[in-house]
Image 1 (cartoon, rainbow, N blue to C red):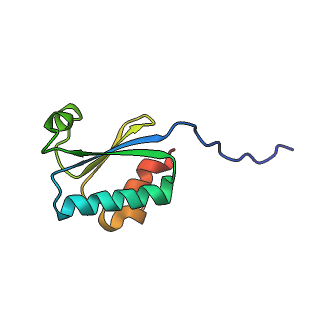
Image 2 (cartoon, helix red, strand yellow):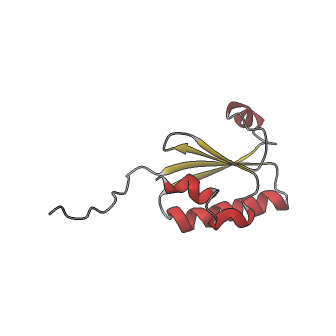
Image 3 (cartoon, one colour):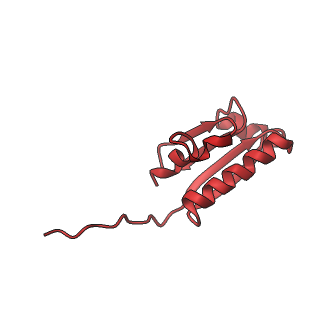
Length: 103
């Protein structure tokens, strides 16, 4: 009789980039919400980079960012994007947990 298998944890971390516009209340709220969601759903298994499109516009162009805030999961593949302020959707079926669930 086969034994139940436990899911294997991957050795590499999630690679996330959050694109924001400046340091206004909306940007700061998005940063806080994304950090809390990452700690809840992927504690210790992620790298989060914050990209301010005002100071690094070339990064937004290179990543084809058309709206902010945008959270991009660059690894594992496929690349996924969550566009807009997370708000109350953090624990919903769609949104940030969905970006993290496949990992």
